[in-house]
Image 1 (spheres, helix red, strand yellow):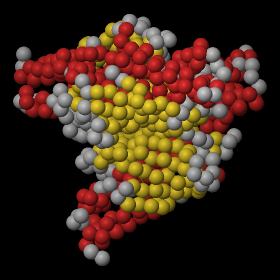
Image 2: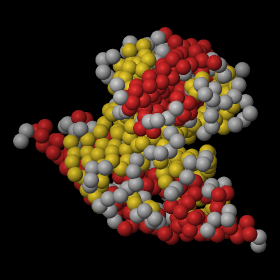
Image 3: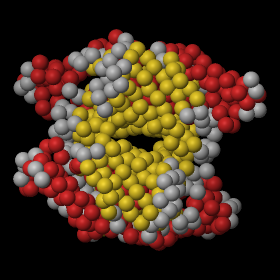
Image 4: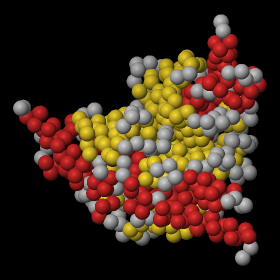
Length: 156
Length: 156
Length: 156
Length: 156
């Protein structure tokens, strides 16, 4: 394996661990990273009683949906920084991840959050030196589109 | 106490119980309703280890902020329906609450979510037959504005 | 030509005329409808001196971009009402168009609005009885994505 | 008049001229700057036949509203840069204005845009080194709130 591939593997492994294992609220939601590369990332989670927001219809809380879209947006914005990671120390990469932050977020709730398993993915729309814009989508296990969103992230 | 005041008290009590005690995800976040009338509502919650989203800076997860703003927005949109509740049975009022749903949400993260206790409040900007628009704010215990948001809610 | 096709042709012709010829501000911007069917619509316009917003870089005003995205979003939301038009009189269809209105709009400016000819298109994300959500995109003549947006429209 | 006041006067005069006289699309809309200081700015314009977007109700085009909110948001974001202008040459201040750009914009249409004269104002919510967030409002001559918005601007 060459140097470049090693850097990439270390970068994505670190990012995956951060979002899946080290961010307390992501763990509370039960998020796992299901794909991650330079094109973006995807995360999945399972329905649980305490994620319900509408007790009449037993659907996901809108806040769970916005949280997961924000998480996968941040993951995607961070993944886009891979090109800057070449040759950086682990400390520097960590500092790069630490400064990624959401500036603003829009979520559109398209269908009631009904299902057993949900997957959210992000796609970079703008990748600047200072600011990244990501579009996100969330589907349930029947591939129905539950929500879409757009996030603007500070990346430098 | 006259009839009208009784209706109002029953309406707000039911709404408070719904948002504070009966919505599972609101309970997971530890939200309590701190004020509620026809002008809108407010909710508060305390910092907790598992609400952290940035382990480097130990600040609130953006998703916690968006969740709480969405919750207080829904509470405010529901409170604005008080004028329609006069003379309705408890079942009808419950049905009215059940159909309140977020159409879309925008959140602006103004400062890192640092603090011990956070309060979010909502104010009705548009109150139509079908759609309500609410502006929301979240402060920490030092009265620093952490985030603002705008939500559009289906109300009929 | 059967009855159904006639209804569809009349519906889309009326909608095209409305957006291209009868809305004064669309005419001021020089918008023309370049495609229109049940999947959505597209509109195009040419760069002009008085559409400039940044005199230093000679790029489109952000307001021109938001205006065109809002216009194509409204066109797309209106086009989605075709299914309701069957058997309606011209007056009723006109009344249907008259009540389509933007509830809210988000625009993400991805690149400077540089170019000679711009095309914007819309795609329905949610098509409810009362509310429709549309995602929009604007490209320049080199197929560079200049901006994306999301609009929520009242449709009933 | 001391040096500092002179800088401030030159700064605001330049900014006012830029937004009122030099931006072609602002001139097409007929915008004039009605107030401007470190707290933000305000702009006004008059109803005109060619600003109409709904021919049935004869109300402002949603794009006119989003354009004016974006303009007053940019004006406000630029005004917040006054603190950086001290001691800078005119060329440097001009370069500072040139790089102010809208990252994203949300507009909430609260009431039909009916009236003879409209005023829009902006207020800074976040004023960072790289990014500013502004909340905007538009009223008609009867002080009715027609629309609100939020814009995120690149400022450095």
